[in-house]
Length: 93
Picture 1 (cartoon, one colour):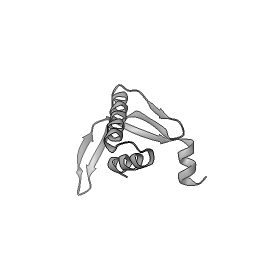
Picture 2 (tube, rainbow, N blue to C red):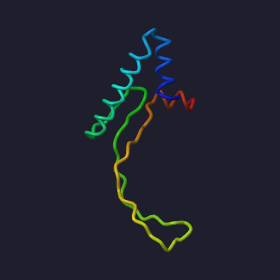
Picture 3 (tube, rainbow, N blue to C red):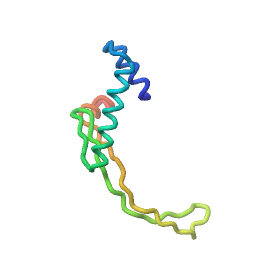
Picture 4 (cartoon, helix red, strand yellow):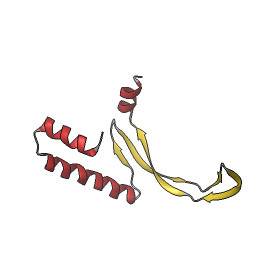
């Protein structure tokens, strides 16, 4: 599903104009990015949690030339942990 698919579906179900739905959706995504940029956690009940995690630096090797060692620097990544309701619907448990 793309952002466009989501806008069209919401527009059909609610009767709102697609352009208005697109603006609201984009603003929501922008605010989520702003919050993550500040280091805040984003939590949607029954959906999941977006949070930042720091990966440590590590050693990498080229499989074709294992003697070449490359240091892969540490970095910050976004992690998603699904909520209870999502887990239940997807896994059926």
